[in-house]
Image 1: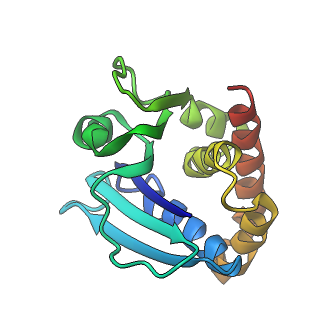
Image 2: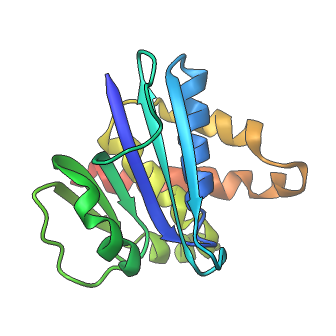
Image 3: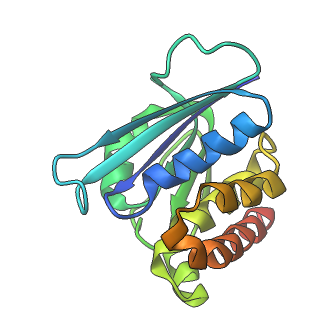
Length: 179
């Protein structure tokens, strides 16, 4: 088994955190993992993307040419990365910020992650809504393991955000089951 994931959005959308949580939870499950971040020049508000590779065996390279799963958090990222998904891949899209038509041979799952995060009370958890959606679509990482991972990697000054992040993952998982 090998899963190549690309996550893209703008700086400040939690793209790197989303990738780190996937990588950390997969490691806890005994999988081989790579996580490779890439920041735009502006960082917050600029482009940001990362790749995560999860495998049952050694990983030869962290570089991903074509992703099995592509998680897109905004319109500019869709334009930039749409060609990086395999034809039979999974394209998960933040429908709150991507309004253009999506022409892809991949299976497309689009939901309003930003709107849902606002309903939960914090726009910054849109990334966790997307994570929950991913977890419901691909049964590679156990959701309970992800929830525990959030507790473990949360910095001391962010412990008060653990519960809303967990709620966002659960909300995203419900969306994914609606497909």
